[in-house]
Length: 177
Length: 165
Image 1: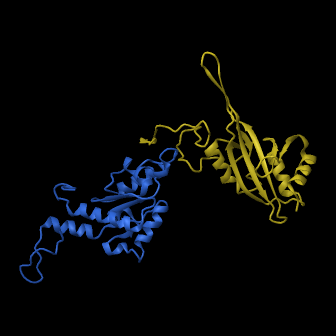
Image 2: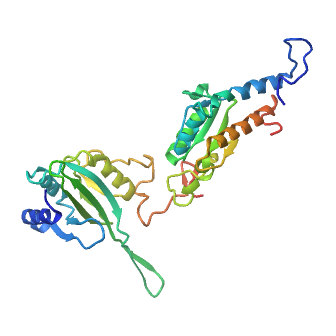
């Protein structure tokens, strides 16, 4: 059994640049920031390393970090600098009973993260949900379709984005109250 | 106004208007589509079970819309489901009745403001006969809704549906 700090050190030694900071000050579970292009190899390492064996992806969630920056110039024109979206991975090793959390942060205007579907099959539907609700594109996902919203829901419309606005009508049915 | 309280001319003979007879037959065996959506469906199932015994009013679930007289919309109607509900309703033969059960299917319920996926009232896609309030309604409330529906059917006319309702 290893603590998140020890796992962070192992990852840092193995991957150096693609492992970003270790967040332990927040009043939530500690997590390790990973760069979006490396999440697949980091996950593979975590699963295959004999002393780690993270064989269970407990959850994978997409979030909107709610950090768009709005500025208004003197003419009253509003400009929005898009913020970030995040994907959180909660891993558990059944053999060693240790846990670790990873987080990948991507820019809202290019929300592309590598899929971990071929490492943990569980990720398939979780990634589809993160895509459906938040709009994160998982590269190399075998079947990235909407999972909850109707298939013909407006392209590029993801309801759990903070700047989401509901359409007036869906298939002729009025949506607002 | 029951059908059996009319005077008997002799034994084993009931005098009634054809209209009353038809309505009585109709309201005494409302077969509901076996269909549930959310937590209200649990209450609906409890109503069907032995303690509340929906069957004593002639209500029993039918697995096919082609054999159903009524549909109880028991739960949150999502936009995705609304199109399916509409199709189920269209597959039912006339005369057909709809009971909207619970706040969600009445008006969107707790999802009225932020429910991006919820239809704010099933009456936006199909015509509702009886609304049962509650979240979820107790079985007694659903039974009362059924009695209201029976009252409505009892007053129907052959020439025109819902004559006096």
